[in-house]
Image (cartoon, rainbow, N blue to C red; front, side):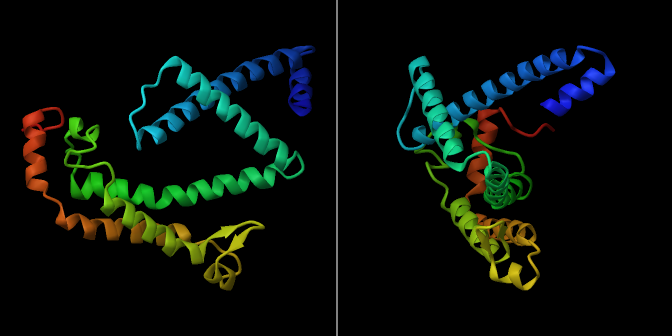
Length: 208
């Protein structure tokens, strides 16, 4: 903040305060979006197990839970270790997204080719079910295959990554393993029935 204020003041006297105020507005806007997005994510997680109506009260409560949780973690980690903690959180989230990304891309471009029955996505007893074992199993195998190649600073270095002087190749393992396994598991899907339902629904039917 001090460096930004100094740089802005060098452009024009007194401009530093204006620049910091503008940055503060932007920061508060982003924080508000993050809080609300986190609130909806928490509600969606609970909704995966039992139906939840996202009323104003529930949204306020979940935002409050997020505020307390994040504030507690930040205070526990402390200013001195925050950069290390934040960097590792980003790395771990990246690991979690790698097999998920592979499965989604394979499903969209190679398995279902963009054709989904939209109403069935929201039906836990429909053709997609509440949980898709094919995607979940491929995800777990992909994540497990990545572990020997992972590097999480100060916490964990996989044996293969250690043998490679700390070079992280997990991305190049997780993507093909998760995607390839999902493509294999998806061979048992009844795509003909699903495509017929897509045609009947008429929302995502291919144009001819």
